[in-house]
Image (cartoon, rainbow, N blue to C red; front, side, top):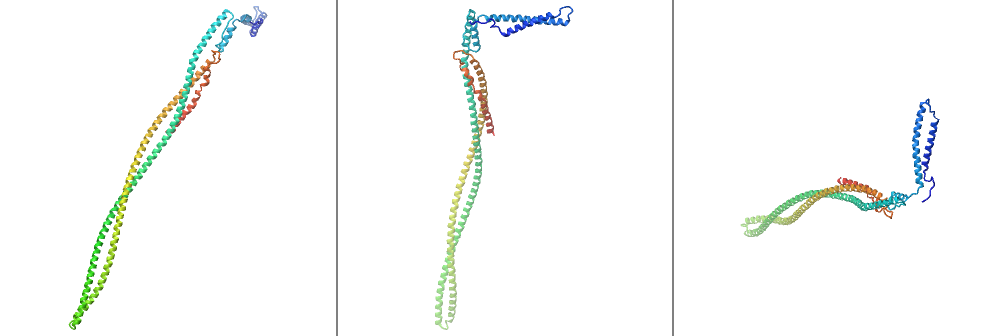
Length: 446
């Protein structure tokens, strides 16, 4: 133990206060000695004397206390410090070092040191028992925070995917509406086309009937022309017969003239008759030749007319065939247009069903989006709560980390837990993502 000076342990401030109090007492007593003490003294002197006496009493008590403290400090400062080991251990324990061991030189300080060591051992065990489950709780809270952050990010990503799906569904709905509108226009156009085809079909039938009537009329005319040709042939035959009769009559007239010339005077009347017959025969021959020429001309014209009528009948038959083909083609076109109209109508109905299904899907997506928004908000609240809990646990971890319970000088996992609890910093990003979800939902609704 080190040796000290006589006044080395006395605090300078306490000594100065004691000396000042003593000097004040001396001054007060000197002032009391100067004051008049007779019965004729003024009352103010009496009051001043009483005040000084009271102050002197207070200073006297203070001086006694100061002297007592000086004496105690002097004794404690000049005695050997047997409790220095206990005091050092207490200072280390106050700093948080529970691994320190107290020791004492005297039986009293040794007993105190033993009790102190037992108390620190129990504190180390208690802190160890607190730290082990606390580290488990801190780990689980950390995992919960990360899971909550991941859930928030998943919710935000799902919200963006739902927004993209809603946009694609809106485009699909618009396409279905366009298909439905175009199908309606095509059906209307197809119906108009079918009506025009039906009118064309009616016109082709009318043309067919008219061609049939023309063919029948031409056939009737052809028959009449044939009969006319037969009549002309009969007239030609009759003209030839008349021509032969004229020839015979001419021969008879010539013979009659010859016989009349032979008869002389008696045959003159017959000679005049023969000459008259000859003149008539010449005129008849001339007219016969004209009739024959006209009949031959009529025969040529009748043959030409008959040939033209036959050609007309052939053309009418060809026209009838073309009309029948056109009629069949129009019927095929009409059937194709009807089938096309039915297909387009079925397509429009299916497009309407697709639109209804898309609307139901859009409603389902809206419901899922609302549920996801609620889930995101709940995740955000859970993340905020986990962040607050992490901050609380981090503060508690820092407080536990101040205690040293082993020789490593480390507070264990609880010291690094405060640096790892950064999940709370992700809350603003999740909130922004949630607001993005709300904005996406509003845009999708529009």
